[in-house]
Amino acid sequence: MDGAARYARVTRHPTLGTRNSLWYWTSERSVARVVYNFLFVVVARLAPSLRVKNWALRRLGVTVGEGVSWALDATPDVFWPERITLRDHCIVGYDATLLCHEFLQEEYRLGDVVVGERAMIGAGAVVLPGVRIGEGAQIAANSLVADDVPAGVTVAGVPAEPVRGNENEGDTGD
Picture 1 (cartoon, rainbow, N blue to C red):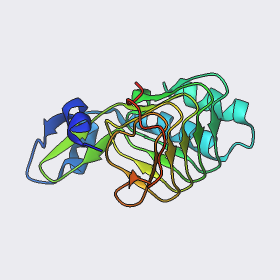
Picture 2 (cartoon, one colour):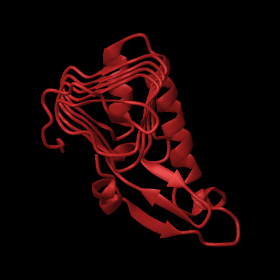
Picture 3 (tube, rainbow, N blue to C red):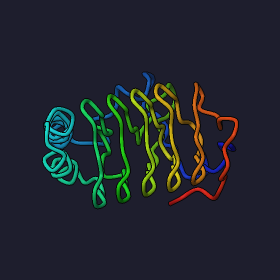
Picture 4 (tube, rainbow, N blue to C red):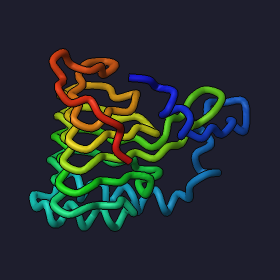
């Protein structure tokens, strides 16, 4: 897997002052919007009903396809959730996190996260900004997904790498 595609899709924004970029988030997002997002993130994380979870995700601006399964404690990006696309019948597992931002020392980065149709993200996995997970791809539990995952491929580890025996390596879904 090659991380170049992800980095090409991530936009970089320089830090505005002498502190790290997290100190300046209020110049990029309103406090009211982040509080609103946080409330709906809590609903998406804790509601027992998939219908309620998907409703909350849509209120956040997440693109939610038909039949999406969002597990207990899974967390969408609280700052830029509208940058997430969940295609039909994908599964986001227990305590997984989809990030659309990275606050760093001298910059912050933003990127869309796309989870392909029927893709599965395992429990505790973290998906970084700009990553595209292809149709039918599988992410093992507790993996760190820093690169795109082609359709039909299973990845595992930190950072996530293809698992031996992948039979169907295809193009990354978008």
